[in-house]
Image 1 (cartoon, one colour):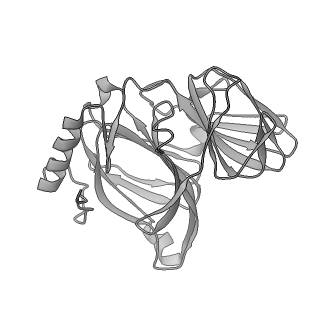
Image 2 (cartoon, one colour):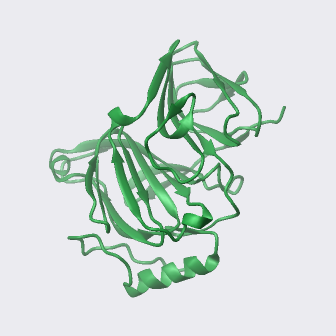
Image 3 (cartoon, one colour):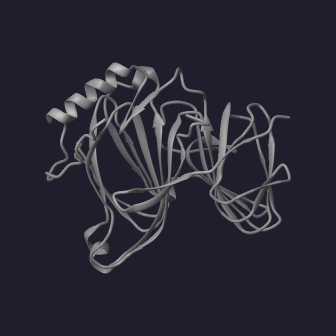
Length: 288
């Protein structure tokens, strides 16, 4: 039996929102299609303050935002204007190029709010990297769930545990929220080639080895694992089929061909990019 790979996330800030980012890491560049994983830490915003991530571009990936607390307004160059609430899935496929904005809705900005959630990036398969952009919103009630012997599973995206999410993923994917009562166990099947878990809170053990909260654990390929909860716990399981080749990541761009990154950087710098209706501010291309 192989030992799981344990990754401790690095602490960063995105436009003032504190995050933990375990992926990508020098130890692991991807798990299935997942190439980027941000845990937006619980943050209280006083009235007049909130998240305001101005226009920025993407290629070659899909973003997935899932909130536990608070709300975000998603706007993009496709004309989408969607309020994202706890338990919803906000899914945007960039294709050859899209821009979007994420911010605290005006009413919550005025009153003050609390934010806690996850945002991940999934690299598109090579044959979809330069495809059309797309956005879809999936309310919490549309996500399938199971509850058995003190273990609740909600399928955020993809398939697993005999559940299938409506989110239009582009390759075999697993992304599940797991909530465990104390003294419960969960068998993690090997139905996906690559898998990892991230512990949001609580005390859990994997094959009788304790896992620290906010740890990302990459599971050995092909092996079934046993997860047990020593307290009420919450975690996510994610992964899927291996990428169809390595990916390069540069700023907000993901591509299998470095030339696509160079082209995207030049286009954004020159202002040759779709814009979000009603938005003028944008995040400029960082210097190398």
